Length: 213
Ligand code: BEZ
Image: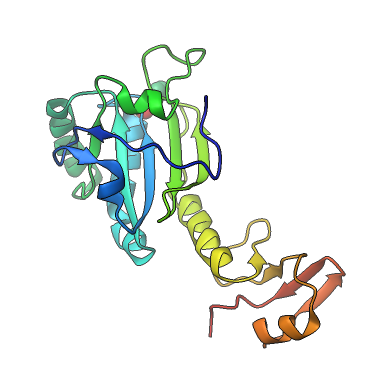
């Protein structure tokens, strides 16, 4: 059965380009981004892995560890990483799971037989420090992911976990946010949102992002 939001991300032990990994232990108290690739030595994946490496500081700032997966063995990953480093002008600074026995692919439902019986789909999971799955996205093999969007969703999750807000469509860090409809107590609203808010309708109340100066 496929994994759903709020499910605990399945734990596993698997080989990787950085040695064997016990997933939950490796995550520790961090957020995680686990993302799968159709195969090694594929052009779109090469750009995605390069992008992820170059975004290291952005992931670190948000307490996020990235980990990739493809169903090829470690020696193949090692050769591919050399290509990625050279062509994408970066250093791959995160592990790539070597899921040759498809252990993780099966746990995370990454083979979609009507798309391909052998290659993993281009899926991505955001996992929080409680090991809960907070975002799942699956792209077609021919479309590379937008990692700015992944960072944007992580910003939204981290913000909305700690304040009584949700983020509107196309929101980005620093934009106004909406006060959750369940919050109705005027005194509490004043306390939580000292900068005030604008009620466009009784249920659409905009307020400046509360964790910004
Ligand atoms: C790629 O990852 O580069 C790719 C995979 C399947 C089809 C086209 C591109």
